[in-house]
Length: 405
Image (cartoon, rainbow, N blue to C red; front, top):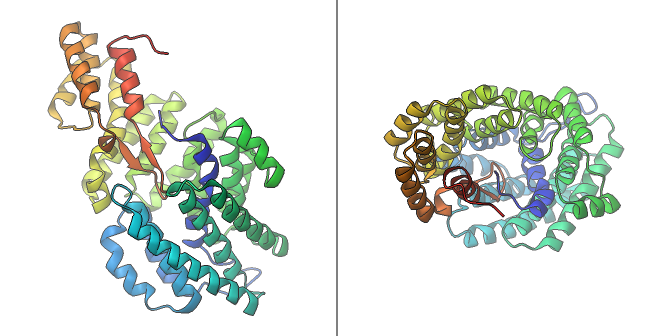
């Protein structure tokens, strides 16, 4: 189970809007044949670094590239850079990096608003401005728990994107924001769904996916981002046919960015939800393989949690197919501080009638579980996903057979 606060899930589409609009943004060539994003090569470098989970080792090169720009472009790219620093530093003290982001994002908004006044017919500046408000909303929500500030910034960002679509109906890429918004609201609590409908839009998985399809089919700059948004359909109450369509988009994404082990985890999660256990196992093992052959600072730093999340699918598959001797052999061989291997080893011991050893290992594992070993920054957002509660639940229910509340 992915432990994600429903209220945060309902709002953190704002964070994704920033990255998936700014990290890919420009305008369609058809209505604006002469207009291009300034220094688009910098965006391409940042996108590659983030999507392949190698931002940390790319920082010096990215700083050099950003310094080749100036004015509102420089300020915007600097704000994105500081936000990315904030994400990868999630397990350390974020204070100084958060402060740097606040200063830089305020400066970017100031310069972008000036550019909008100077060049009202250039949609790039409005696109960046709306996205910057989304970024500020995400930081207010994820790091400060300032919900009303997040809401205020988010509303402003949505207004700007809607104005762009009204003015340029053939500009499909901003539909990314409405697609994310509809999906996030649909996956949130009853209260958020109904309040959002009063001021923003109604939640709809089908409507959100339809918007994303428009971006994938007709957008020029955000097709990969529209595919990536489908990670939000890998959990929760999603009709099987929609989940299968979402999985196809994620599989297309990893063809371009095969080094993103986290996306393999989400694909495995989606296939498990569909009951396609063999495919879930296959993609989990592919993710582990990608970690092995494409080691980055991020995957090394979060190696225990990421490997545990991917390995868990493999262990579940072996349990479901009753391959208990193999499950025992594998879990005994690995060094896994997260406790995941021990939990499934305890289950295999129980299944092979070694109950005393199973119970002893299960209770020892419960006592040693730590959030640090079971938490991972969610891809491109300031929120953590953690397996601690779900692993505890698994041990108590399936190994110790304790009654659950």
